[in-house]
Image (cartoon, rainbow, N blue to C red):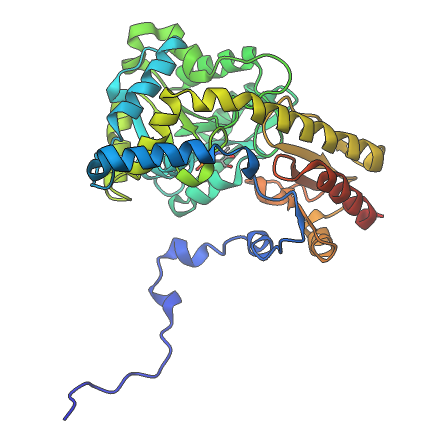
Length: 411
Ligand SMILES: Cc1ncc(COP(=O)(O)O)c(C=O)c1O
C-alpha cells in the first residue's frame, strides 16, 4: 500500500512568500515586450555588439588548447578573486596607464553587471542616497533594486553630468553613499564626461567623502575625438602611492563590448578594502566567474587578439553610427533632436514635447522595428518623448530601413 499522502491541489500564493522588495519589483513591461521580438524585426533595442566581429575562431583555438593542456584546472572550482594570470594581465594594462594597483586591487566579475550588483550589496542599506545621472544605465537601477536606494539625480548636458549638482544635492538631501557615472559614451545618451569635469568630480567626491563608481564598458569604442583618462587614472595620478588608502574611485570594466558578451567576464578595480568586501559578497553569489572563460580571455589578451580586432570593430561601428545619423537626418530633420556620440553603441533621440515613445513602441513592433523608450532610464523625473537607438548590431541597409519605418510610424 502506498503511504504517499494526497497532493494539496490548491495553488500556492507565492507572492505572500516573496520578500517585500521582490513583491515591489514589477520588472519592465518594455523588457517583456522586447523579449518577444522576432528575427524579422529590425531591432535598435538591445545594446548588442555585432556578432560578425566576434573573435570566434581565435576563442575556439584558445578553448581547445586550454582544455587540452590545462583542462583540469579550467574545469575545477577557482578562486573568487579570479584567475591570477588574467588579474596580472589587467594590472599590467592599468599600470601602463599610470594607475599604481596591485593584485589586492582587482576582482574578476561575471560581467560589469555583477560588479554593479556587488556594489549594491556591500554599500547600500534601504533608503541610502545614491547619485545617478539623469538619465542613467537602467541595468544599474535593476542591480540595486533590492537595496531600495533613494536616488538623487545629476542633470547632464553635452559634457556629461553637471558636477555642481553633486554639492547642491548633498546640501538639500544629505550625503550620498556614492555617485555613479558611465563616463564614456554613456548608455543611454552617448554623452562623454569632459576632462575638466572628471577632475572637478574627483575633487568634489574627496571633499564630500563620497565614493565614485566609474562604469566604463565603452572607452575603447571611440570613433572620433580623443581618448580621455578615466576617473581612476586621474585619481591614481593625483594620489600616487596613497591611492590604496585615500582613493574614492571604484572602476568597473568588461570584455563584453570589445571581445564578446557571452563569456561574461568583467572586472572591478578599487582600493583593497572595497575589493575584499566585494570578494566576500561574490563568495555568496556565484563562488567565482567561470575559470574556462577567464582563461580564454587571458589568452586573447596576451596573444593580442583583442588589440588586433579592435580596429575592425571601431571602423564597423563608426560606419554604422554615420549611417544611422544620415538616415535620421534624411527622415527626422526638424522633427527630432539627437547628438552624434563620439563612440559607444547608442544614439539618444528627443521627439517633440508631448510625444510618448512608450505608446509608440507597440506600433513600431507591429511594423517590425524596435527601440527602447527613454522613460526607463530616468530614476526620478521621466522624459516620455525620448528614445534610445542602438546602431552597432544591425547591418547598414537594415539601419536605413529601420529608421525609415520609424519615421513613417511617427507621421
Ligand atoms: C553602462 C553599462 N554598464 C554595465 C553593462 C553590463 O555589461 P556586462 O556585459 O559586462 O555585464 C552594460 C551593458 O550594456 C552597460 O551599458
